[in-house]
Amino acid sequence: MVNKDVRFIPGLVALATIAVIWFVVPVPEGVTADAWHLLALFVGTIVAIIGKALPIGAVAMLAITAVALTGVTNSSPSLAIKDALSGFSNSLIWLIGIAIIISRGLAKTGLGNRIGYYFISLFGKRTIGIGYSLALSELLIAPVTPSNTARGGGIIHPIMRAIATSFGSSAEEGSARKIGHYLALVNYHSNPITSAMFITATAPNPLIVKLIADATGSEIGITWGGWALAALLPGLVCIGLMPLIIYMIYPPQVKETPDASQFAKNKLSEMGAMSGHEKIMVCVFALLLTLWAGIPAMIFGEAWSFNTTAVAFLGLSILLITQVLTWEDVLKEKSAWDTVVWFSALVMMATFLNKLGLIAWFSSVVETNIQGFGFGWQLSVLILLSIYFYAHYFFASTTAHITAMFAAFYVAGLALGAPPLFLAFLLAAASSLMMSLTHYATGTSPIIFGSGFVPLEQWWIMGLVMSVVNLAIWVFVGGLWWKVLGYW
Image (cartoon, rainbow, N blue to C red; front, side, top):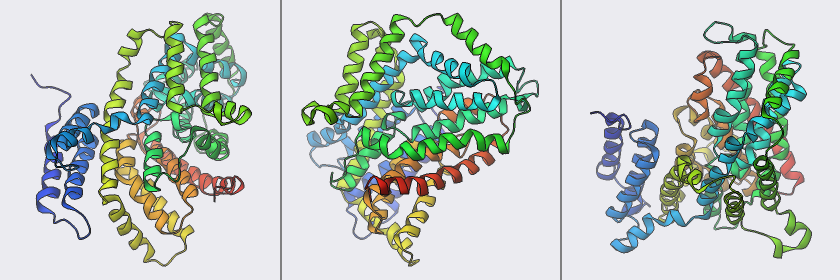
């Protein structure tokens, strides 16, 4: 019997990659053998993830095993296994895992659907109003749904399809351009923008925080509130323009939708009044956002500041005590436990690549090549940003891309003279915004693309257009906003 989870050719390619880097490619000057061998394991892991040789959690387990057995981080077997498992002690990893479990309550209680239908009932009399309703729904639930796939593909997409179907817009019947084509594009392009706006809006964001802290010797520690404030203005501008830009490029055939508002009201009527569990979810979300934003500390002083991960545990504890979520729900949330495993492996490898000096070496190579053009730091950073961003055409995973490239490009940007916080927020945003490019860019892509409303060519065209728009907004509007905030 063939195991569908195992893909032998990508697996062999990953092993061959490790072997070539380890045994064939000479260790460059200025790099230790251990650092180079860890790079071989790291690149092989990324290749296996991209090629989907095994589920990402299984690949992570193999990576942890390889680091422990090869002793690339420490020649002592007991210390090597301690190093290999060190990622599990990272609080940011547990923040994302717990937040994913908490977000299960959105689906279980129906609160996610209620939010979507509520916005459509208010703004759904025109197609563009429905588009903005979908975008606002994404934005509202983004801070507490660290799986962008669950948010865009599991919560918003079914609502979008229900609206399209109610207007007789179907990919199978050739009527996608009625309204479904437009709504699917808005559904998708909301996802990268909201993912860029909060640390807890997509799983790799805490990894970025960790990489930035490591690169600066912990001089820069980005908080939940700091990230949200930095992304507030450019994110809102992107959300405000995106549905309109898509409307101008691919206008829907149906522009007036008086029935959509009534459709949403009917759905809300079917759902009835908010249940007790929904009200508890709302209160927990409000509590999480208040504490993550550091509002008590602003009012009462530093004694009222709380660790971000501890706050997530508090939210989960409340949901367990009130039985909004049961322990069975927690155990069944496979994506959360999967994320904790593979994130721990990648964070561990990235951390030791930095400790062993490999990141500093590679960043100096990037810096030297860009510096050769003789440009100032502003233009140099734009070149660096463009290379980092559009390299995502070759990745099917934002996590793999970020783990492979972020740290080196951030350090290179610092060496080119870029202000640390300006560069941090710019590359952090790009790490989510690059999801817009292709139909395989992130987990949300194949779900929405697979619904058939948008042909491949139009998906890529819209992706390229939105990539330019989003980057321009984050560079110019974001740059001015960060100047006002005193970040550079």
